[in-house]
Length: 80
Image 1: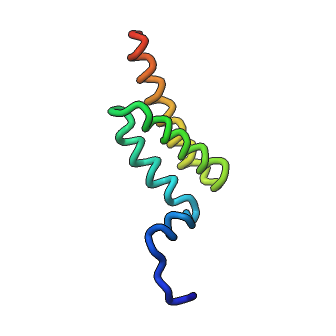
Image 2 (image 1 turned 90 degrees about the vertical axis):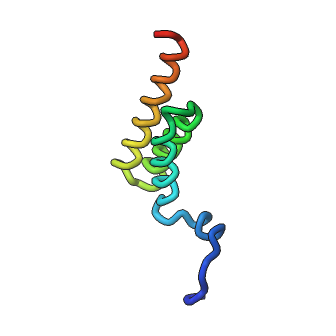
């Protein structure tokens, strides 16, 4: 249906070109220094962008940023 508007839920399901992975990845990357599990979400979003959506630069940057914050968290927990 050409002129029909999609609801927010329908737009979330389509995920055109990995836009949701980018939005959630950037959002969680900003908050991941404060909350540990968000770094893992950032890595997940980056890997999905890299593998499924063929967005190599954005996916790689998000995955590396998430991995760095997770590494920093673990090093702080171990007292290094």
